Structure formats: C-alpha cells, structure tokens
Image 1 (cartoon, helix red, strand yellow):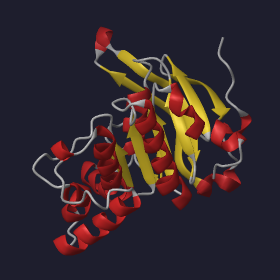
Image 2 (spheres, rainbow, N blue to C red):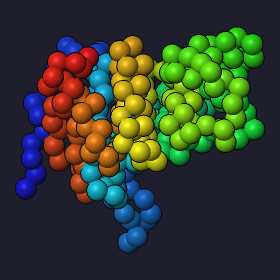
Image 3 (cartoon, rainbow, N blue to C red):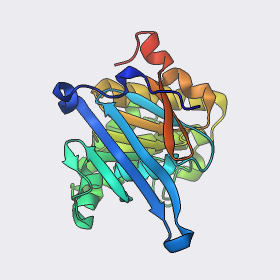
Length: 253
C-alpha cells in the first residue's frame, strides 16, 4: 500500500520561489516498442534552498535516474523539471552543460580525483575549466581545503591521502565554484563509519548553512541523522517523504 507523502512535500504557490528543485509528473522510459522499460512513473518532488534531502530505496528503484534528471545530465520522457528557477526541459544541450558547470556540484561514491594532480589542483579544476586564472583558482581551492581540515595536505597527490582525505578533496572540488545545488551519489559508500559521519557533517555545514539545496542518494542508514527530509522510492515512484532527524532536532535549516 502506498504511503501518502508528508503534507510539507509540496509547498504553496506563494513559496514556489523558495524552491531550488521543483519536479512535477516526471516519467522516464528507456527502449522502444515492446522493450520499453519505465524507470520513473510520475514523480513529484520539491526541494527548498537550505535543505538536505536524502533519497533512499532499493537498487533499481529509479534514484540515480531521478537525480540525473534533476542535475540536467539526463532528460525526462515527460513532466516538468525546474531547477534554480530554470526550466531544464526547455534547455538545449549546450545550455545544460553551462548550467551544470556554473550552478551544480557533484560528489560521487568514487572520488574521481586526477592522480597526477595535487589536492589543491584537483579541487581547483572546476574554476580552471570556467576560465579562472590558475593562481586565483588555486588560492580559492586552498582556502576551502583549509576549511575542510586539509591545509597541510595541499601538495599531496591522491595516492598519498587516506580515503577520508580523498573524499574531502572531492567535496572541495564540488563546492569550489559555490554551486546552489549539490548532488551526492552514495558519498559515504567507500568510507568507514567515522569518515562517513565526517563527510556528511562537512556537506551539511559547508553546503546547507550557505542556503544551498543538497540531495543525497544513499543506502547508508548511518547517515540518516543528517537529513532534513528522507524521500523513499520504490518502483519508480516516491512512496513517502518523512521529516528527517536534523529537522526534528531543530538543527536543520
């Protein structure tokens, strides 16, 4: 039996401007003819600025497909997707690439650091790609790494860092261009419990307290404590949206 979403899943029209993400009736199908697979089935979701939403559910339920659509790396088959006030469905490919580069940060389960670059060089990559002067990009990246407790690891290569330290470099890379939306796909899956906790605390402190929207795909129930809301997916639908421990405790945005 489907559990109705919490009443605060959808906000009034008057507060729509406060939404970082607004998804309505999103469907995604792959294949054609008799081989069509429907991965998303009429998904509705709002994510306000300043909120950390965790997206949970079994493998294959559509979590990664949904966040890919929200991030603009995949288009829906039907429905409306508004992110940071922009209609992603109406955007062309080049506009989406520019939008992601300027406004979206990504953190993955694998760190995806460039092995030949130092910590500060890896963290500065988005700024260099955006055309910043190298010296200024490195200064900004170094300051952020220092905030993340890696001020003494700026010149270390990825192979010289622990897993937790590599993830902090990846967090710095995701946040260095000050994105308004942070998308995290299993950010703690490669970490032990302590480093997973530290990672989520850093994401909460650096991103949410800056009034950014954060969506975290996770199977790791140990990190639920950092959620403002927890959206449960199954069979391509959001079955329920519950208030998370962070909001219940009053520590959320």
